[in-house]
Length: 64
Image (cartoon, rainbow, N blue to C red):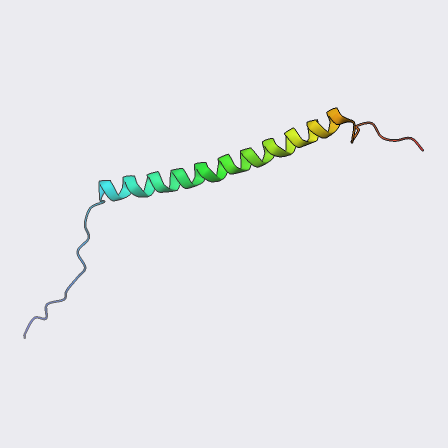
Protein backbone atom coordinates (compact mmCIF):
# COMPACT_ATOMS: atom_id res chain seq x y z
CA UNK A 1 0.00 0.00 0.00
CA UNK A 2 1.12 3.46 -0.75
CA UNK A 3 0.99 5.78 2.24
CA UNK A 4 -0.61 9.14 1.62
CA UNK A 5 1.04 12.12 3.15
CA UNK A 6 -1.49 14.40 4.85
CA UNK A 7 -0.45 18.02 5.13
CA UNK A 8 -1.36 19.55 8.48
CA UNK A 9 -1.19 23.20 9.37
CA UNK A 10 1.74 23.82 11.60
CA UNK A 11 0.94 25.80 14.70
CA UNK A 12 3.39 28.44 15.74
CA UNK A 13 3.87 29.78 19.20
CA UNK A 14 2.45 33.18 20.19
CA UNK A 15 4.17 36.22 18.77
CA UNK A 16 5.14 38.38 21.72
CA UNK A 17 5.37 41.58 19.68
CA UNK A 18 1.99 40.95 18.06
CA UNK A 19 0.41 40.25 21.45
CA UNK A 20 1.90 43.46 22.87
CA UNK A 21 0.65 45.54 19.94
CA UNK A 22 -2.85 44.07 20.13
CA UNK A 23 -2.98 44.55 23.91
CA UNK A 24 -1.70 48.12 23.67
CA UNK A 25 -4.19 48.97 20.92
CA UNK A 26 -7.15 47.50 22.81
CA UNK A 27 -6.05 49.19 26.04
CA UNK A 28 -5.71 52.60 24.42
CA UNK A 29 -9.07 52.23 22.65
CA UNK A 30 -10.84 51.26 25.89
CA UNK A 31 -9.07 54.03 27.79
CA UNK A 32 -10.05 56.58 25.15
CA UNK A 33 -13.68 55.53 25.31
CA UNK A 34 -13.62 55.73 29.12
CA UNK A 35 -12.08 59.23 29.04
CA UNK A 36 -14.67 60.44 26.51
CA UNK A 37 -17.42 59.09 28.80
CA UNK A 38 -15.82 60.82 31.78
CA UNK A 39 -15.46 64.14 29.93
CA UNK A 40 -19.10 63.99 28.79
CA UNK A 41 -20.31 63.32 32.33
CA UNK A 42 -18.09 66.11 33.68
CA UNK A 43 -19.46 68.53 31.07
CA UNK A 44 -23.07 67.69 32.05
CA UNK A 45 -22.29 68.17 35.75
CA UNK A 46 -20.54 71.48 35.14
CA UNK A 47 -23.46 72.68 33.01
CA UNK A 48 -25.94 71.71 35.75
CA UNK A 49 -24.07 73.63 38.44
CA UNK A 50 -23.66 76.66 36.15
CA UNK A 51 -27.42 76.75 35.54
CA UNK A 52 -28.05 76.29 39.27
CA UNK A 53 -25.69 79.14 40.15
CA UNK A 54 -27.31 81.51 37.63
CA UNK A 55 -30.74 80.71 39.07
CA UNK A 56 -32.16 79.31 35.83
CA UNK A 57 -33.02 76.01 37.50
CA UNK A 58 -33.81 74.95 41.03
CA UNK A 59 -33.56 71.69 42.91
CA UNK A 60 -36.54 72.59 45.09
CA UNK A 61 -39.91 71.46 43.79
CA UNK A 62 -42.26 74.31 42.98
CA UNK A 63 -45.38 74.39 45.14
CA UNK A 64 -48.69 74.94 43.46
